[in-house]
Length: 73
Image (cartoon, rainbow, N blue to C red; front, side):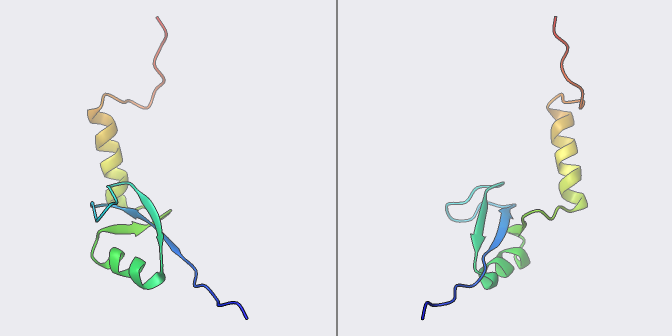
């Protein structure tokens, strides 16, 4: 009979780790994913925190983004 494969957990990296850069997503066995999350190297994909939202807002603001579409001249 075929071997049962365990379900992968998708994580998004918050720190560089191995070949993964900040913002990369990858799937891992649940135990490895939990370790990455506990050590704050990654968060489970699709789950954002208030700190993540604040970082995105600050980055956008510093880049001159105001959330409005640019006008054509």
